[in-house]
Length: 253
Image 1: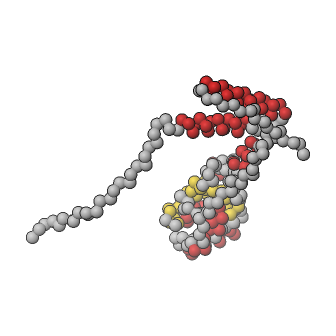
Image 2 (image 1 turned 45 degrees about the vertical axis):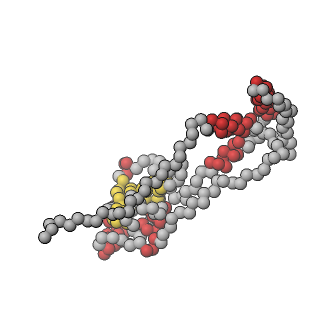
Image 3 (image 1 turned 90 degrees about the vertical axis):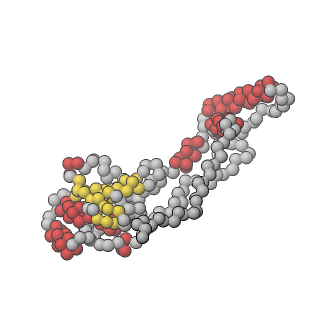
């Protein structure tokens, strides 16, 4: 009788995805030169208007649809519900001395400001809340801070929710001592995050009205560059002549 059983080998072999062809060296020199010249011309054309000007669409809006879920479907107070509720009732009857600040780590995707406030309001009144986000993209860093009106309630929340399994993530919930709370911790708290319209700000800065001196300086630089192009064509043996480009200054309303 055989002492071991050999597994049949899988006859199907998966082919490795082919790498995209690498661009040929030196093929990007032309486009890079043209792009550099176009960018320089764009800087020179501040304050001038041409007949071919057309309006551009606003590209500031972010169409990223956030992930949402029903907070009501999440489980309520964990561990021993009766014990936790009894502690909360006792803490609420005590006079409020100071507020309690909690650190929340390993927040699941989609658990943001509104969801945190709706979920943790079952323990007590949430006074301030902030989710740490990336300054450039606005994406959540999956940790945040929450403040309750009572330090006793905050301690009960930390004891109850620390190491609690929430949507596949083991939640971290720790009390931050009062002397360790950063003075700028609550900057931007209780506010709905909005992306910085960088494209609109750059467009406004680019299209701002220029002074007469700036417009004259730009016109001289444009004509000088045009003369250099004529000389380059002549050196290359190309017999081509063109008139000076005329620009119209914007008429004051």
